[in-house]
Image 1 (spheres, rainbow, N blue to C red):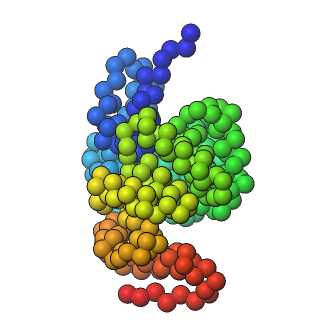
Image 2: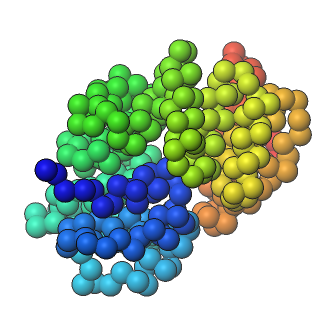
Image 3: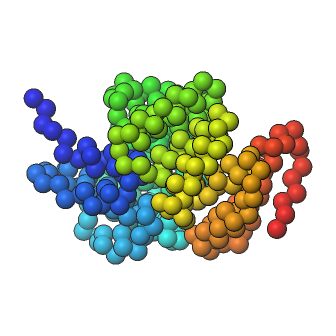
Length: 299
């Protein structure tokens, strides 16, 4: 008889964006060394997701396991030390002793995806090996507008564990990307999560995006306002509220200004702020004027 998976609940909380709940539930008894290392990586990744970069950097020292050192690199990268983090990451990936570590490869994929260097990200993640890596591959291929390759990754996940939370999430992500009848299926996946687990901003945003695709903008707004109450600084919620309010004919300037203030604080880069503004203007223009070929962003 297989032994119980003591980290099942902890993983699901993390995957669904319940980061504080994951941290609070991390005191799991009876873990062996490998499971304890996985638990610690999940906890520190939860702190990273909450923006507690300095805590992670200060708590993980040079004697920590490779998986934790990888999470520390992600915290360094997101805190602004991009060059240092990427230089160390490349050095570790080239080390035959640790370069194949699945968490290190996962963090490499996440960092290079942030850099929008998708070929480099896939160089370290494409071989899979874990559901986390396959799920990241799905995200990368969706960003590359290659839903065909994303679907292959999803099928690999379904062969491993069709009911796994990551498999269901990947199915929903791909459904939203493909559109059509798949949107309803994605909505039902997020609804199922909402009934089984604590409601999180991630789940609320997932349901809201599905609602917008189905033309239910009032319901989407309700879901997004609930998400905003949970985290008023979440960029995804703010961006979705902007698009939703534009479709409803409501003012969105408050959300827009808040979004770009957060973007500037996170990047400390006026150039990135301008890029983000141009991207959003492009997105909004394509939503309302898909045949337009010129863009005049206003500042």
